[in-house]
Length: 224
Image 1 (tube, rainbow, N blue to C red):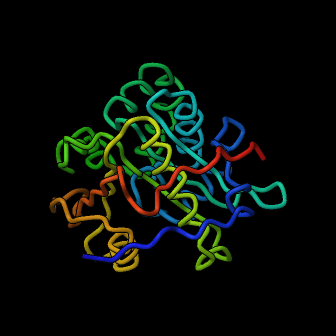
Image 2 (cartoon, rainbow, N blue to C red; image 1 turned 90 degrees about the vertical axis):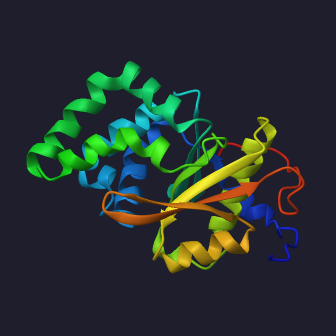
């Protein structure tokens, strides 16, 4: 078991984090594609990603934050209170905007059709159904890596989930993603099971939030 110490919060870094907004969608799409270019959402194209994030920011089950420097969004994290409910809500409200670019992406890359159909199985396949809160995507520009900015934005997301009454958060990643696995274990996440998705071996991690030494209450961060 990893011995966890309190997270050393840098007020300057924390002050650059704000809730994700509608105007951020195009930039978020770029950052998402840069870090996860081989993921299904990225392969469906920039238009799909931007439209999806525009729909997500208005969804009650979505939680997203961005990191801003010099007026530019340089990183983000996207999570949910309930991923299944979140996606249903987006399709209901924004389907007319999200589906056309998704279909165009499938026309350009027909092999994505199978993955798109598999997406509906994600909530069941990933397990840990008793943990609805989830961290889905996180990406930063390369020059911010290793500067603990990602740790701050993860803490902000986890704190938000805790403040909303969630007792745990889950994250899925590829089994062979050594960097992600190492980082999650360093935060005290536990292995909650393996599954296969999109032809890849995946692992689900769960972190208990109440009483976690790195999740002391912090003041709300200002809008940048």
